[in-house]
Amino acid sequence: MIYGKIWLVVKPSVGIPLFLSAVAIGSFAVHVALLTNTTWVKTFLNGKTATAQASAQAAAAPPAAKK
Image (tube, rainbow, N blue to C red; front, top):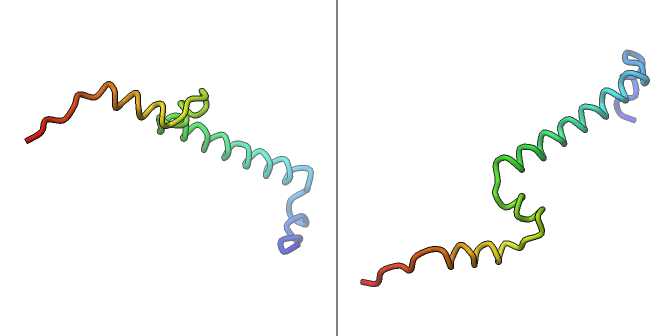
């Protein structure tokens, strides 16, 4: 282990839970950021495909005027 000497300073009974909780909080923060800042994740998690959403948006959009 490269950083094995860290356990001489920090007890494993404190360091390991602290490390695991930091990983869990970081993961939760990333998932919350994805859910709040994107639209496709919510659609994906609800079981809809991107093509169904794109075709629904295309059907709702008015046709472009030709010159």
